[in-house]
Amino acid sequence: MGIALLAHTGWGAYPVLARYLQTVSDMPSMALLGLGNLIALAVYLPFVWRHVDKRILRSTLIWGFALVVVLRAITNLLAARFTLAIYIQPITLMTPLFVALLSAGLFREPLPPLTWSAITLSLLGAALMMSDDVGAPGVTLALTPSDWIGITLATASALCLAIYMILVPRTVQHAVPGEAVLLMQLVTLTIVSTGISLLIGEEWVRFAALTPMDWSVFAAFVFGVLLGSNLGQIVSLRRLGAPLVSSVMAWRLIATLALAALLLGERLDSWRQVLGALIVLTTITGYLWRQGR
View 1 (cartoon, helix red, strand yellow):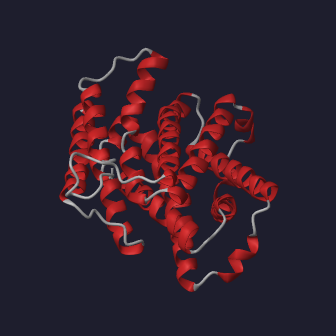
View 2 (cartoon, one colour; view 1 turned 90 degrees about the horizontal axis):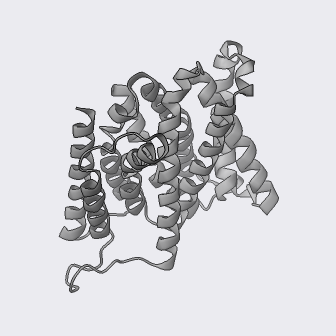
């Protein structure tokens, strides 16, 4: 549970760090993802290469997992370019609800009690967090066209994460070690994102103009999230399963709000937005603890 909490802290920091690097440091998105995963791979590979059975690479499950990881990473990163980090995290927190819906639809598992109520309350809380001036009549969303693009990408990313959380525990049933899961994840993301970056002609020379602050944020992004949070999430999911790991997922929103205020100046400016955050936190936490029980 301690590892799960640390992993959630890193994923809470992800949209903040990703948004800073793309909008403040002005780093090209796919180059950022490619170089970040390449560095994480270079650090991780020497420790696990001799312990990974190469026959795992012939597993259909591992390649399906890799596809989900790529889609999840790209949509998650691009969402942070288009909209605020504090708008992305409430959507990400709805992942357990997506897990419940997908499990019921794909595997005929019973839908947990109060799922639809939790979805309704979570959407209400997210809408309040994105609301306009407190003096405006009713609840008016303060969203630009760019925000809508980011929110759409964040929703697609949350769906991919839900599939990810369903697949990871099933790797245990197929005797796929956690080291192989993370290794495949880093290799796939490095190759695909670097390839896309070169294909669309991103300017890698931007890395030469980064300041010490930019490099510090980049280091936190690589070692704290791409390596640390990924490994922590895989380990905790395999040990505890998706429901228990998800039960402390609401902590991500707290981490996002704190770091976004510190690094980006993004804050909840009205009582409606604060109320929305509390609704999301309470709803997701209550739903997951009930489900875990």
